[in-house]
Image (tube, rainbow, N blue to C red; front, side, top):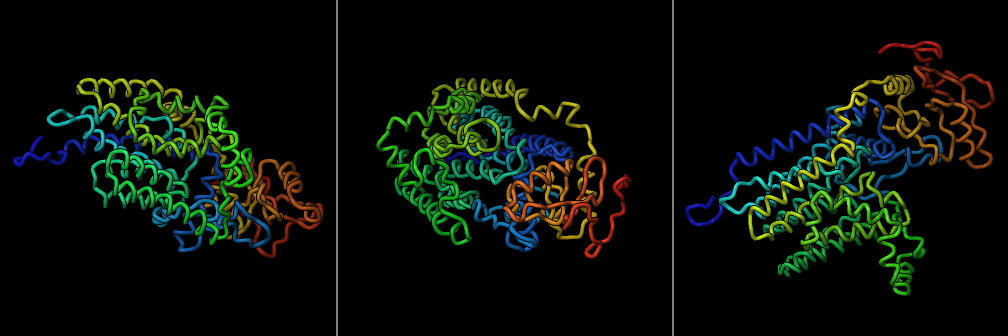
Length: 498
């Protein structure tokens, strides 16, 4: 609709109510799936446990030390999360722990943040696909394609990660830069730099896109800011926190250092291509990324924003970076959808743009049964189990602040009452162990510990519904001392309620 002075009016509230309703329904769907899986203990647990400890520390105004990533001695505070990844934006989630003492807070926040990205995608699609006085039908469909996308589903099925913020902030960055609202775009870029240390690549490529489009001054600023911020974070800030600038250098097949890797590629230029396509699962993943948008993203320079993230993953020597599982493709999906919208917007006839949106939505719906969110309709996901309740009950029996060796899926259920310790990151035997296989887990622990410290023995302290708490003893067969804690309300043979 055109205003009295010939300028386009802002979108009518009813249009925003429509996309807001779509995002709300999707967010509820995401959150319900995460809740049902969480109460079954169905998450991998490692990442969710790490971020639970991190955000919980922020909520109590502490530094984010993570015990599951480091246990070298009794009372070890753990590893500072800043040395692993640079994600200070997680502080924004701390107030959730003032309301509810559960790691599910993070899964809920991830669901909401993923769904919220549909709004800037809708705004961008409306501008590209639905020139007034056309109805915004195609824009609604494009937002729905994003909300149904399989990268979001894969991320929702695999714990919580900092990627929760990425689609929303990337979509805001693209939409605001496209509208030439440079102040808003700069704020989105600044927040994106706080999501993860490599997000400077996305900001820098935003600058390249703007340069190609003709916005030279803004493009130069974004390119310089992205590269400069990334260099500062990786080269200065993370090392100051005790990390290494080579923390995520996973290209050892090319060389031991970035310089050696670049020299290797200069000497063997054919590997620039082979690293991107071999093994073929890399190509398969890319095809799956572009399939729901019918490959129309290839018609847009916006796709450049995804290029460094793809290269970063595909040149690495870690295979799980290349596949459709996990959360890595969620960093890309807003870029892919908005690039496809831009590509469709280049069609001269509005009906062709609408036809693309209809076809893309049809493909997205057809793919749903192949990905995790369809499990909400299955009876198995709605069935309750005793496993989570048993773990939470036993852990509450321990003194506050106890260090407990536990399997990864158990980490999110400590409630902050105890400190989880991981088998692969333990250099000393913790006082307690939570297990379903006492002998096997203790044997594995002793194989991990250094010589002279690898004779850990545990006595049963309490058992409940298939889970056992063991306490470290000094000699085989000794009973745990009661000097630091009282006996639990349940014995090894009883099954307490509650």
